[in-house]
Image (cartoon, rainbow, N blue to C red; front, side, top):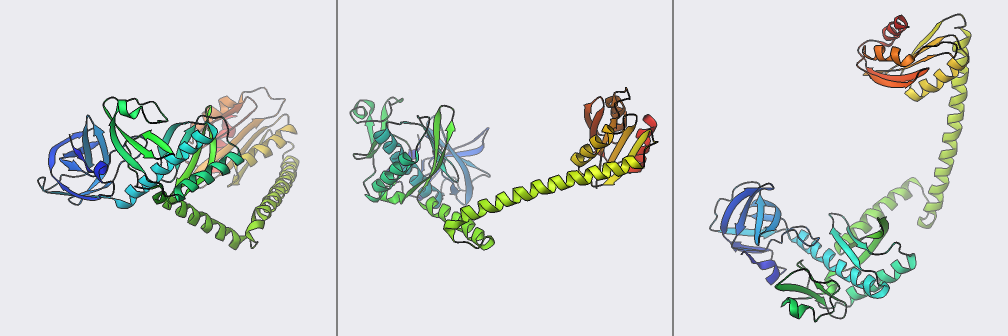
Length: 393
């Protein structure tokens, strides 16, 4: 069994040890040490990272009681191993995990809402709460109480006790282990069986900020950050806000309304542009029809026309050309797109024609018997492709 220094001194980031075993599994090459300060993944908390004799440790897992340190290459001096834990990552995880304990305790005590799961992510932390909704009033109340507990700088105690001793404490969850269990205790606030790393006082959590919640099945998933992550989020949001003020020169309190008006105006312009484009397509369709009255096949080749525009133009044309075929091609930089249609007086499945045509450009597509669309590689130019389709017709 590896001696676990992270339980003896959570602030120990440097240590000396030796390798007792080297092996590999599905995760990669790993070493087992006589003693270690590297915390392995467990209980919702990610593993520590760092180095062993300068070799990067990218993962740490506990398997069958041994702590496996996963490394990219062999360690040179196995008898004299110096380990360095990434201090910033460790302290961040301590802040987030202890903050989670406090948040879960407040929701349980004040609203009778227990926590069912916990995930410590790279950017934010989430807990699943056993309720179907949260109100703004509840969130404001809970966040205020959480930060009051943090500011109170209460001690965070850890102790190993037997299961029989542990049940004498007001635990929030029934223990699922046998033998000795590690308790994390914030007196009068929280009593929990937990194997994670925690600071010595709530004050080290610094602050907690709720970021919002979403429904997750029949529960609620609350997203939050603690400690230095609060400052990081504040910095990110301040940067976004500063950029917004540069683009929209308005006071902060007026930005939301101003951006809302800009979006509304933009949507109105988009609607007007769409209406004008529809009118232009109609006039274009009429022009094509006027010069194609006696033609049994109407064909046009365009440059960089979107397929939706081809479809709209094609529908307008075939509606007024009941006895004609229609071929519309759009030449793109590396592909050809097409619309193939027939008038109402023609009884022919255009899917069959399109299927033959698509072999010429290694394409794909489909549609209704009277109107199909597709596209493929630009193996020939648009005019040549249109001519080949007309021969098929």
